[in-house]
Length: 185
Image (cartoon, rainbow, N blue to C red; front, top):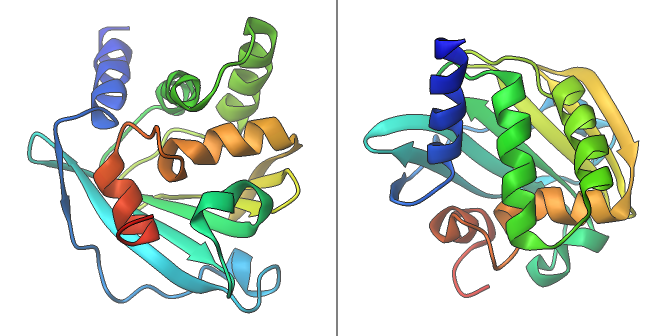
């Protein structure tokens, strides 16, 4: 129980300021789960999230040609997180709900449904594990853990708020948002 509390605190702190962004690995190959779904996908941007000197994850935004950052909720793309440390899936899911509240409001019934979805979608992760969220541009979201499908949902509100954690202006990590989308967006 104590270990879980520490990871919940770490997961909560990992998405909050202060943090530093460093350039991510330049050699990023297209994830297999995107090759058939988004054949024209390209790497839009990438960044590494560090919290008090600890590397948490590398984020990669995969988009199709013509991607418009301000209209992310209505376009196909994928967000990939490559973890550098162990985190509990429950802690990731709980923190995601909290961060989604920064992007927009929703009621407790939605929060409970979305938390249950994310607990299923996000297993415990270890260093080098990959979580990838694929958005079709119409509200259909598929989640993958190391290339294996873990959950799917068709919910445009959820898609907008969840991916808004990284892509919306009210993101708690504006430097990471800029690294993913590019400057002046």
